[in-house]
Amino acid sequence: MRRSIILYLLTLLTILSCKKEKTNATTSISVLEIYSDSLFKSSLDSTTIAGGTILVHQKGETLLKKSYGLASLELEVPMPENAIFEIGSVTKQFTAVAILKLVEAGKLAFEDDFTKYLDYDTKGRKVTIDQLLNHTSGIASYTEIEEFGSLVPQDLPRDTLLRILETKDFLFEPGEALIYNNSAYFILGLIIEKVTEKTYEEYLKEIIFNPLGMNNTYYCSTSKVLKNKAYGYDYTPEGLNQKQYLNHAWPYAAGSLCSTTEDLLIWMKAIHAGKLLSTEQYQELITPKNLNNGTPIRYAMGLAHLNNYGNEEISHGGGIPGFLTQTNYFPEQDLYIISITNTAGPHGGNFFVDNLMWKLLEKKDHESLTLDFDPKEIEGSYVGQTRGRMQSIDVKAITDAITVESNNNGNIDTLNTYIGNHTWMDGNTTISIKDGLLETDQVYGHYLLKKKE
Image (cartoon, rainbow, N blue to C red; front, side):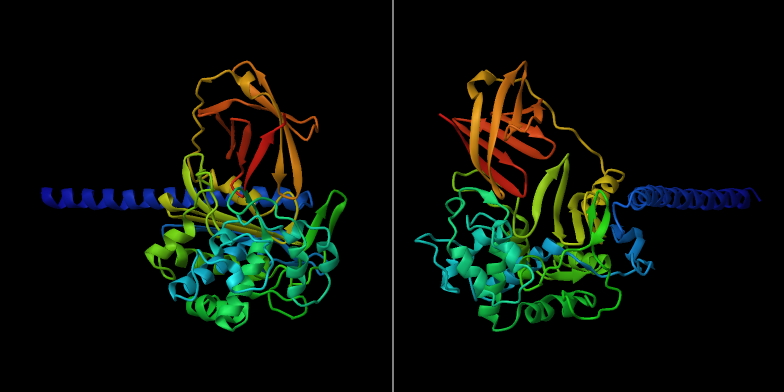
């Protein structure tokens, strides 16, 4: 009898324990969903977005998968569960993997001068495929040139763009800096087509979409009628407008894919779990290189790889008229967060991902050290090329810190978090000032500004 009672009590404790674990898990998921609902509701109520989706997946379990708002404002159509969006520059990681597969097959090498495959006047410079992949080529980016606005609606041969780019000065010597560069990925797409003798889309279908069962991922079209495709909108303070027209001949291998959050999860899990790439190839994909002067960067091949407040993050965003995408992977936590909005504006996919991830991750602030030099030594004005413009930064010393002001715009930032070696952290941006050179690493850009004499 006593034994029976003991067994009964043990069984009861086990049941209660299981119920407690289940309740805690449900509560955790519920809190995440409630927070997501509040973020999207406030964005919808303020007409900051038309709609969007969020997907959170960790250790084989989907913690949150939800659609919000409208796929069409005009027709008041709710966002479908597996809505298809234009994903912009998230396309770049697909292009990078396509190049890696060609390297594996021995059809090209990272060290190759890209002019081995395409006719392009580099004015005597060697630009490698590796430098195209990590935005260190120095070639002018076509989305920042004056002529791009007139190209947007036109249907012209792709060589047209190359001939225009050839007339532009290099922004810097290859390998000296990192300026985010859509031209580089446009060129990589042309190299893929030249080497494979297939269209960019055909090659991706063959090596990625079909093998992985990504049935809702394809090269975007401005004319095809496609089921579950969300309409895109652009934000203005006066309200949302239909997105600017863009002929998809131009984003191309830099930004012309369409997909869903579900397909993007399939894709991310495949590359990070070794389903598409060998260990060696995967390390090439995610490992940033150094600049010519030995300075490490934080952009690898179509993917940023950084320490985000104590958390290893491999990620990329995408922006194109009408749509904003963010795809984040945290290896240590085996956590994927993907969000897409059908509105280009202040609350894109990155807004929702950035907010939700800190509900699941510990945010560790950078430790600040005492200055080990006199900051007056580095006071002055620094000038250099950044994305789309020449930038001037004024540096001034104050007690135990420095202030920086960009382009004399009146917005003065105080840098308090000193991490040693003449370097400060400002969020996830590093600013290093030494020997007449200001280096600022914003992950998607590593800029070098020289001190005015």
